[in-house]
Image (cartoon, one colour):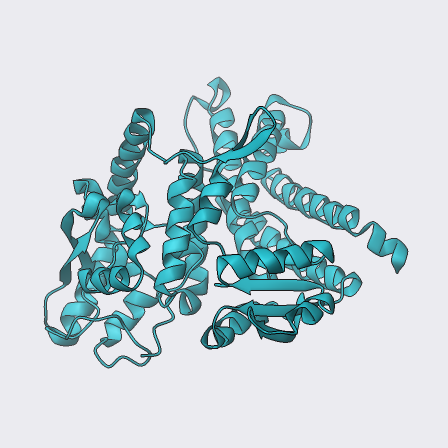
Length: 445
């Protein structure tokens, strides 16, 4: 077992390589039934192989990769399946282009679609098997780490335990403590990993020093200073080391590309989703005959107020406040629309108008903005960038994520902004639809 544990990373990498090879083989073998040229060394097979390898690498990386031991099996399998489906479609389009030649009368033909679907199904099976096998192997050679949770307040403990407890195969929560506990150093020494959540800065510096000295893995819930340092770069003045964190501003080129992308994708999205618009409108009207759309004032960049457009999911003229569990204001149609985020689709109109962007901090209700800002003045920093349909808070968080954690997620996005990161978030947003119940979890009260 010690030998296997020593080479576990190499074994996992080999499993990933075999999985990708089998997925590529399934696509080529099935498409090759009607396209013999891709089963031999030809221009078509080379171009398809190059596309599958390069785009597969980029897409798989965007979706998090084969990171067994870090994520649960189901999210990994879903992410990799979506990445490979997109890769298959791009590779298939290369085949269609290569088949459009003089011999075929220059006709564009989308042939072998049935074999493409079979290849996708085979790949989903392969990915699922290798993902569960990879996680089983990882936890066979890596027993759960003895984990200590340290919080600033006792009231925060249950929330942190619940979040980490989901990964019980990797983290065995053996103890917990407040940052001020007198025996905390002994608890740190007996743990393998230590999680710090909202611990006062001075105390956190002291405790992380103890962790470093005792070679413990450390997980820290960041504050604004941490985010600035993470987005900064090292700089030396003589023998004095500094981290240089610039106040982030989008360049002119970034603003232009982001806006053009918003216009293009929102237009395509409105056209493609038009059948869903019709179905949603009929469902809402049939239930109570009320208005189809719901508008509400929200804040965007610089505090500018705009009216957000959504499908109505609550009873007509219901009291406006955040949704709670078993909320009787939500209609039957509304529950379905909210679960699959279909109620958000009309915001594509807001994006087209320029009120919102595809990616950015989620626009909160004005009532929430006032309350959150009063409790957490830094909440106003979210208004440094245009409000978005999706973002870190939507991909990584939930509807009931706390205002503090929403702020941290949004500042992570703002301070690490790039067009590439926007593309990655857009791609990852698709996976939210497969965890609808978790991502739309409401407030308790």
